[in-house]
Length: 328
Image 1 (tube, rainbow, N blue to C red):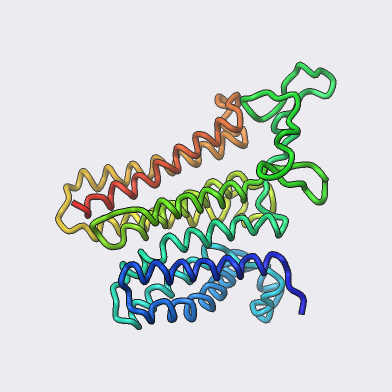
Image 2 (tube, one colour):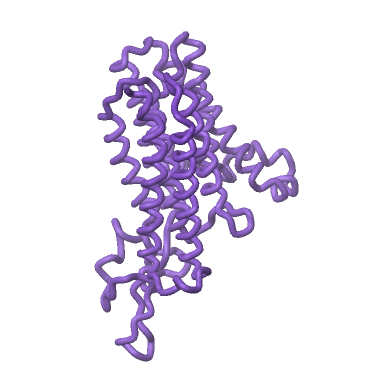
């Protein structure tokens, strides 16, 4: 049997996540059997649902391979959203089996889940994925005129060798150039936010789970936009970004449905408008990156990404504001 570095990394990340969950469950006063039941249910469900989502998103290709390919797990073909769908379902099942509130168990899963997500993103680099634009294109100059800047960034660097290598970039094994290590950036950000969620103090159960889910979706939107490797698409649309948008809508709906007291309709409408506007800003930034908005084609790419980061922060705050009303 041959062990692959990518698989070993993910296995270690899963173990770390489960140990952190056991620690958090103990601190929150959950029943001792919670830490035993969750991994038994979560591991198979996450693998199966991540595989199922991948097959659904590539249905035509999957049908060509035959149904037996579904169980060829060593061939790759998994989606992170499916894995976290499995984790969410496992959390609900664990809560039911141990006769505890789902929101309490979900809160205990939140920070460890972000740790697992962050380490999983970093593992993409081991698999030769998760990289962005080439450094030399980002800071390039005209080959015939060294003073003519043709790069993608607002900042002009004649010598970008400082960014060649970790933690900024990874070397493309095929072309040999250096590309931004997007997966590392997103992975580290997830680990930082995991600490924030861990220390978050709220008066209502489920707050950690809501915020962790919103942060995970925002980081996914950013990563999918920055990636220039193999990623799942429906035509020109990036699948994980669509799934993130749907998840944000579900999160906002949950926040509104679980309010302890009636809220004015104007407030509900304002929250949905805020969510839709921020999603629209993400879409606008994507079009600007592809230079499809003619009157804005002068905006450098790092300016477009800054706009997208602002939109993702807005998305998280929209969900946070809707949920915060429950803490009053």
